[in-house]
Length: 128
Image 1 (tube, rainbow, N blue to C red):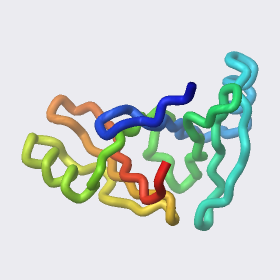
Image 2: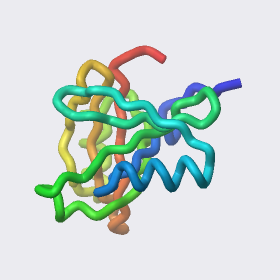
Image 3: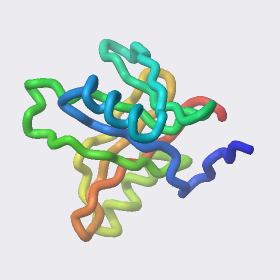
């Protein structure tokens, strides 16, 4: 049975890579993952599926984003992104990517915690 994430749970994981084709080949061969491409705004986003469940995505780092290293990012579900951003700032976090809307699906921000680790916060704008 699929568990719906609760506020405070990790709810998504995402790969940023400069070589989408190679990443899909590697993870598909290594773990049997399947991939589907979706147009979101003016970009293509690749959904990752294991069995019947989508659990993550992949976006391709473009040549003009050469300062972005390849990485995996985890997302934590929050009920109110603006309120969560203010709370984590008071607790010593810094904002690396400000509140960013993703079509009508949701919005996110990337923070750096007081130890320097990066994590993303996600507020869904659609009911699960």
